Image 1 (tube, rainbow, N blue to C red):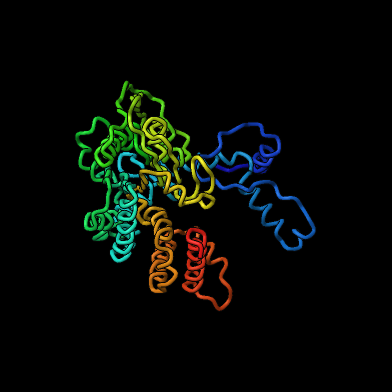
Image 2 (image 1 turned 90 degrees about the vertical axis):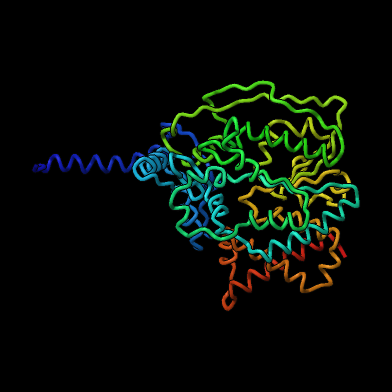
Length: 437
């Protein structure tokens, strides 16, 4: 078919007009779109023009980045692109979301933990657990109970739905989960292994431990977690804790954030397979029951437990150190007095997801070790170096931090040297803060 000049000019002008549509949308905001889900780092504001910024080419770079992240129809176009990739190729444009069989979604970190790709090594695991044992024994003598809780990994629970790509790099003989559990059993560490518990019981559970399109526990699994935790505390504290039961259960088509967090991060136009979700109403009988003071340290899985308002009914006083960085209630963890926190707590609860064991206890075990045995760390260079090497191994798995370190390297410096110096410096700062001379 031959297109005449008039038609070709019309098509050319139409194409030019379409190219200006995103610019006009950015200027006039004809349509409002829901914000993109997941990690979506944007410029804080449109940069202001200055001679200094222009001459240093800072303004140009900031303006270009701002335009890239805020052009008109960006959310709609990203969702369209993601939907086409998902529907046609089962491809995820999100770094930390992997599409499994039958549309089961997994976090890439969960798969790395399952296959052992982030294994820190037996020597590191045993060294950390031996120090953990000393801390546990010290707290036992003080009448306090330290317990390690390992929450489940969706890749273990739904291993039959993992994509074939999960095994592209092979599967290691050991994993952080296997090594830490073996070491905890070897050194008699107080612990609860929910990863094994849920994986072993998955064929008999009334409802799965994980949703199909989310990576955190379902409300049902959280209820099982809560009931088991109460029974554990009652046995080890020899006290009658508040009673917990499920007062009501019902089905709904409306999902909570945790039940579709991985799907939301994909930023698709169409919802995945229609789902039904279980809702439950918890009930606590706490009248004339014993409520211990608890200091909890953990990752995002602990929020599921708090969503039932369990801390309000089960504990007398409670503080949660999220990733050992932010305290709820409180503020930055480095502004707390660790000695006071230990004195106040009867139970120190460490909640570590199985996929997160490459950063065991989020350094709170090190905080406790420094608090009790900081003088040893100062007086024994070999011990100091051993802990630095352990922290380097974990730091190297933090891609964002490693990118920052490489950006700060000067001419003549090696990456190994810069990483060691930075980790050693941070360890000395922690030592001075938690165990002053």
